Amino acid sequence: MIKDIRTFSDLLEICTNENKTICEVFELQEANFQEISVEQVRLRVKKALDAMKNAIEIGLTSKEKSISGQCGDDCVRLKERYSKKHAIFGECFEKITTYALATSEENLRMGKIVACPTAGSCGIVPSVIIGISEEYKFDENTQIDALITAGAVATIVSYKMSLAGAVGGCQAECGVASAMAAAAVTQMFGGSVKQILNAVALCLKNILGLTCDPVAGLVEIPCVKRNPFLAINSITAFEFAISDIESKIPTDEVVDAMAQIGELMSPTLKESSQAGLAKTKTAVEIDKKLKDKYKGKI
Amino acid sequence: MKQSSLFNAIYPIMIGPSSSHTAGAVRLGLLARNIFGNNIKNITFKLYNSYAQTGFGHGTDKGLLAGILGLKVDDIRIKNIFNLPEAKNLNYKFEYLEDFNRHPNSVDFIMESDDERMYIVGNSIGAGNVRIIKINDFSVKISGEYNTLVINYKDVAGMISKVTGLIQLQNINIASLICDRNAKGEEASMCICLDKDIDLDIVEKIKLIPDVYFVKNVKKLES
Image (cartoon, rainbow over all chains, first blue to last red):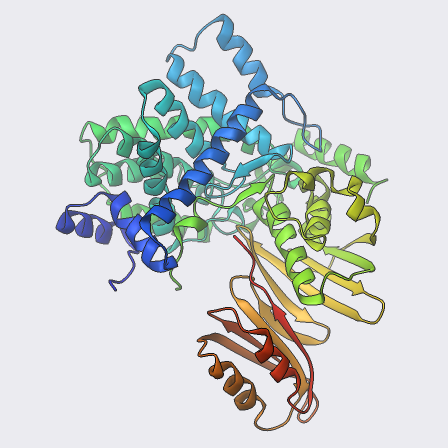
C-alpha cells in the first residue's frame, strides 16, 4: 500500500501522476485505511452532508437562544432583511451567509450539527457547498466530491498543526474551515488540483494570526458571526484561484507559517479567554452576569 | 505521527456547541460506562478547570450524564437529558473544582453499584478526542479508538506472556500495551489495545489466570 499523503506537494504530485482529482485520491486512501469500499466511504460522507442540510433547515427558522441567552436570533434577522432588500452581492451571498449563521446558531442551542473540522466552525463548509449547489444546481455526487476535497485539506493541515483553538488559535478552526470551503467550491466548479491548492493557500494567508478569545469561554461571541464572514472569505480565494492567480508562497509553506504562528501565539489568546475580546470591558461584564446567573445552578 | 482519517475532519455528527466540552463529555461518559458497566446506582461527576468554569454554557454536565446513560454524541435527547426517565432513575451529582495540576478539561467519575465502587479520571484533549487516564489508583490510557482490555492483577512474573498468549489464540493484533504497578509484587494494571473484537471466552480465560483481580473488556466508541 502506498504511504498516506501528508503534504500538499505530495498530493499535487500523486494527482498529476495518476491523473486523478483530490477527491478520487482521498476516497481511495480512506477506503484502504478503513478497510471498506469507496462506496461505503462516499455513503458516510453523504450522511454528513445530509446532517448538514438538516441543521441548516432547522437553523433557518429557529429563534431559540443558547443556554447563556447571548446568541441565537441573528439568522432570522438577516433573513428578514434579505426578504425586503436583497444583498448587494446577490442571492448566492444571501444563502451562504444565512446558511452559515443558521448552522452556527443551531450548534450553540445544542442542536445536531457536523463538526467540520470543529463544532465552533461548523457553519462554514456546509454553507458554501450547499448554498452554491442550490444556486448552480450541482448534484449530490458533486457535493460529496466537494466535501471529500474539503476533508482532504483539513487532514493534510492536521499533520502539521492540531485543529483545536486551544493549540493553534481560531486559525486552526474557522481559518482551516474557510480553506476547506475554498477547496470545495473550486472543486465544484471544476478547478484543477493546482487551482484548488492555490485557493487553500490564498484563503489561509488571509486568516493567519486569527485568535481564539471567546467571551465568557463560550462558543458564541465572536464564533457564531465569524462563520459567515469566513465562508465569504473562501469565495474570494476561489475567485482568485480559478482565475489562475497563484499564491507566491506555496500551500505547504503557508501551513508551516500558520503552525508556527499558532505556537508563538500567547496562550492567553488560545481558548483560555484571558485576553483580547474576552477581556474587553463589555465581555467582562457579560462574563460576570453569566456567572451570577449560574451560581444557583452549579 | 499516526495516519489520520478523513472522518476526523468532516465528522462527527454531534450535538453542539463544543467538540471538547459537549461531544468530548459524552464520549468520556460512554467510556466510563463501558468500563464500569451499566448497573450504576450512584455517580458523582467532578468537573475541573475549564470544564467547571464554562461547562454550564457548553452543556458539559448534560454531555457527561448522557454518556453515562449510553446516549451517543448525536442524540438529540442530550439537550433535555435531565428530564429523561433514565436520568431520573439515577442518583447523580455534579461538583465544580479548580486544580491546575490537572488537564484544562478534566473530569472524575465516582461510580457505585450495589457491589462495586470505582473511580475514573478522564480528559477531553481537543477536537472531541478523549482519554481515560486513571481507573482507581492505576494509570491507564483508553481513547475509545480501540477495543481495550483493562486488566488488574498481582505484579508477578510472566503475566504479560500469559495474557498475550491467550489473545494470540484468536490471532488478534495488539496495537499497544501499557503496564503500571503500585510497587514490586503489589497490584498492577495492563491496558491492551486490540485491532479486533476479542471473543468473550478468551476474556473469561484471562479472568481465570491466577492473580488476576479483574478484567474489563472496554468496547471502542462509534465515531
